[in-house]
Amino acid sequence: MRIVLLSLCLLLALPAGAGAQALGGEHEGHDEPSAPSKDAPRGEHEGHGLHGTGHGGRMAGQVPEVRSLRDIPLMRRGSGTAWQPDLIPSSMLHWDVSGWNLMFQGVLFGGYDVQGGPRGESALAGIGWLMLMVDRELPSGQLVASVMMSPEPFTAGANGGYPLLLQTGEAYRDEPLHDRQHPHDLFMELALSYTHYFTDTWGLLLYAAPAGEPALGPVAFPHRVSAWYDPLATLGHHWQDATHISFGVLTAGLVTPVAKLEASWFNGREPDEHRYDLDLRTPDSYAVRLSANPTARVSTQVSYGYLKSPEVLEPDVPVHRLTASATYHAPFGERGFWATTAVFGRNVEGEHPGTNSFLLESSLDLDGHHVVFGRAEYVEKPGHDLVLPEELEEGVFDVGALMLGYVYHFGPLGPVRPGVGVRGALNVVPEGLESFYGGRTPVGGMVFVRLAPAGRHP
Ligand SMILES: [Cu+2]
Image 1: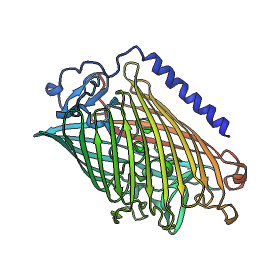
Image 2: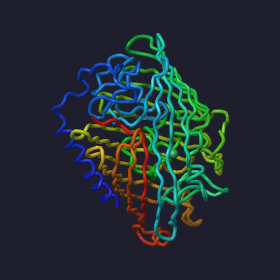
Image 3: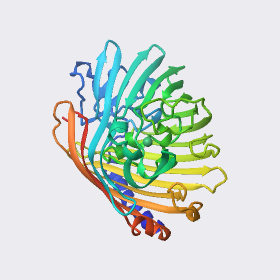
Image 4: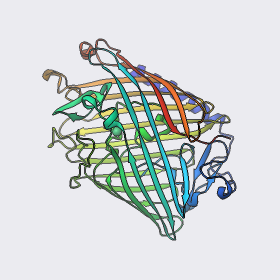
């Protein structure tokens, strides 16, 4: 199975490499910024549907090279303080209100989720997030406040979450959740951050969040461009980026225009099944992350976290987590966009041997209307996570999934870009689990509608 997954990963990666070559003749991040868009109507983006949202609300058709901290586009923040490439497709609404820069982003999915086999179920599910960000330029720094909320407690919360074969993580009614993805909490982020510029080239980042994301992992999957069009979660979520909703986070970091070193002190306990409140506790966990954005198209990170007591059902078992990731973004044709992310995540739980996860995903917006996306995953899941019978609880099972999907976007209709889509996944389970899943390759899928703020295309 490893070989099959590896070769599929290669197949997915090949076109990305070819795309990189085809676009290699272009200037990368060295383009002159177009004229500042102060005269342009608010909420509109110039250029080719791409933007760099710089300070002071500057919008440019191309992303200028970041030479000073002041040039770092706000949207380099993909989630929490995690960086994504500066070059991103425009998909947000934007206002200037007396020196405050307001941004609204998000994505909502609604549809029918069908998961096959004895452990699969079907359900209507509403999935997504909405976020308001406010930023203000100060003489020697930048202030950013963000509020992010999810409808999932209301729309995907029945029986502990929406059906998703092989998914694990968090608990519901004193049982670990399995073959379901827990809903995200109503308050996904309530955060305030300040970056102080000591010089043009180095500064100090401070981030405080009653609900937010510590410096651990890549940009969380709901916020990655490479996963934007897929409503459902990654199977490696709890090996890679599950701390994106932590209730109590303090982060400090040193920032340069191309790199950042951060450390977080945070509450490492997973959110509980009551999704409407803030599960505040004294911080007990820490994380460190080194991020680098060498060009406007590339973002990479490595991070380590110590989670003292993440699981409410096993409060004495700490988890050491190690992650590494790389994301590549590129324009595609006149109006398209290509985003690819690779992630490695490893957990060491208490005295148990470590378990690994690998992910490769890509989304390709061909022309502003047709989007194809896919993901290959391999995760080593402990038997107790999958809630297997006692004799299998201590085992570790290699599971995988191969997902492909398609979205057609209409419009845009005013500020909204509606779409309809479908995604299907072929899951792979090892021999010992056949009887639980009704075979080696149980399948799952979803048909859905998708709503997101419209990016402006020329
Ligand atoms: Cu999550």
